[in-house]
Amino acid sequence: MEDIKKIILSGGIVKFPYKEEKKEWVGEAYIFIYIHYKIKIVVNIPTIKLCPGGYKDYAFSEIDEAVKNFANIVYHKDNLMYKLQEAEIALGLDGKFGDLDDEKFCDLVFKKREELLKGSVV
Image 1 (cartoon, rainbow, N blue to C red):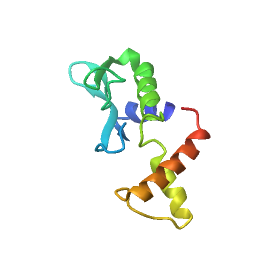
Image 2: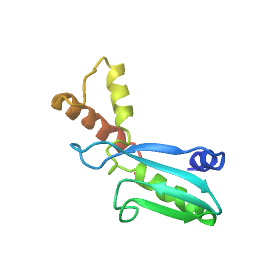
Image 3: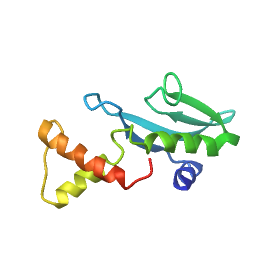
Image 4: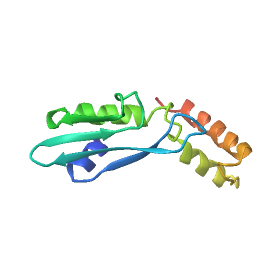
């Protein structure tokens, strides 16, 4: 979480793919600092888990809470994109490649993702 904080304090934007249902489009979660007559932390995650609408402003003094909430939602098993690319890489290193639109390959990737999640704290 400290990396997220360092990036946004340096003027960067942290973006992460986000989705909760296999068949839905991939959305984008992001966090950054907005400065225009006031300073605020902007967090947008396409889920109701953050708040209705998925968009929330935090006061600058709440930066640690904003970063924590962002990380706890995007780095969670409910975000199907979390650990998905890591699963595809692991399969690719074993010579298994495919398209996520192919149901058999998609199931294989999600099975590998579940294995990776078992070794993570989510």
